[in-house]
Amino acid sequence: MVTIIAETSGNNLHPFTAQLVGAAGGDATVLCPGGVGVEQAAALTGVAKVISVEGDCFSSFDGGAWAAVLGAVATGRIYAASTPHGREIAARIGSAKNIPVVQDVTGIDGDSITRPIYSGKAVANLTVSGDCVLTLRPNIFEAAQEGGSAQVSTVNQSADVATSVREAIAKASERLDVSEADIIISGGRGMGNKENFAYLEEIADKIGAAVGASRAVVDEWGLPHSQQVGQTGKTVNPSLYFAVGISGAIQHLAGMRSSKYIVAINKDADAPIFGVADYGIVATWEEALPALSQALSEL
Amino acid sequence: MMTDIAVLLKQVPDTTAKIVVSDGRVDESAVNKWSISPYDEYALEAALEMGGAVTVITCGPDRAKKMLTDAAAVGASELLHVQVDDLTTLDSNQVASILAAAVAKTGLNVVFCGKQAADSNAGTIGPAVAEKMGAACVTMVSELSGDASEFLALRPSANGMERVAVSSPCVIAFDKTVNELRRPNVKGIMMAKRKTIEGLTPSDLGVDISESKVTLQSQSPPAEKPAGQKFEGADSVSIVVNKLREEAKVL
Image (cartoon, rainbow over all chains, first blue to last red; front, side):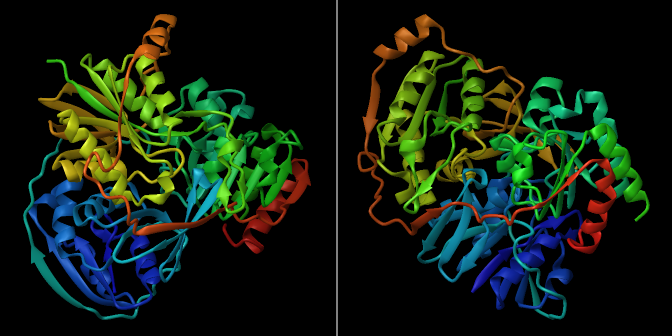
């Protein structure tokens, strides 16, 4: 039996939760932190039980408090999403229960588990014995469909909250974050300068994509680190990743090679980025981006 | 008030090192350079900037001692090494137990570490050690001010960023910060060579490592991608966009 800690987004269940249910393969108990997404969870096929876990601690994120309350209800093997909150809660619950935690899992077959290591430069093949906490990499496991009607119960628990939010700082732009986006368009040193990222942003806005950047341009041109894709930035796996003017240093490849489809645009036909690209275009960005913008408008 | 801090460090292959898998294991002899895991370096820098005494703690094989000496060269005052010859034989709970016990031995209540290590990419240790300490934890911190009576930590939130107040006992797990990492000078390097490293074993700390609940069966190279399609010139952009829609079905 698998207990799932639901991933939520605002007042809704995050789509990752259906993937956790899909990976559990039936008879899952879903815990909804703060009572969010209870009805959506109950409607998923493969969910046997939904527990609305309520309490004062859910008004802001405190990993210790959330883990205490959710961990008190979670039993057996526990799944959470491999997101910052999911990982932190998983780490806490495993530690409190003295059971192992395996993060960012990409394959589960009974007790056999696979996960990428060295930012995707290798894979670890593991076996687990007994109860454990696993976080599952988003967009790898097939989502459970609607069609269930699980019973719902409620628990209300309190926990000590050791952190308090003093200041909220809104995002500078409304554009999606690279870790959330289904399409990413990233630029590297080949873009010439920071100002030319406006061309990437224009295309991103057209298709609802996030704008990413290589380490070189974050370090040298002062782009926000939150945009950095790669080993010391974010590891992403969107459906579609455009790499523009990025040569493909090993650190960058480590952060994006698991994207479903990769399009590389580079004027250097020998750039390593073409080695991981599904579609490579040998051209300057000055020529390719206007053509891309136009082709996307015509869709 | 100056805050004394314990910093958890992990030695990993330098991020520029090529990872070679042979006979089902990552070949360590092919690693040309071992370094402090990048996010741990930001944790160390943040601890040094607090101005108090910095104790660095690691768990790993003999080679990890050099990393402690490197940390001493930039200002760490106490060095603690827990001998584990192969970390891949331990599960996360065992490693967290070892590190939490080592922290308890120092008597320190404020722990800094990286948000995740560059080899395992897991990010379990910070919160897991906090849990065993009965401490608060804030992860992915890119800016920290204040002291142990109240730290203010900047972390990502659903709507952007937020500043979170937290006080000792606590674990702060760092993301990349804007702080420039200090480099050792000659005097620092010379002093570090004379520093003693306190050596411990898991059993010295009362941690049983005989039964890992996770067994590493093998390590393997990532699945090979089939060769892609390559086109010349900007005229091919519309062809590719068409393929993204018709073949890949991602647009």
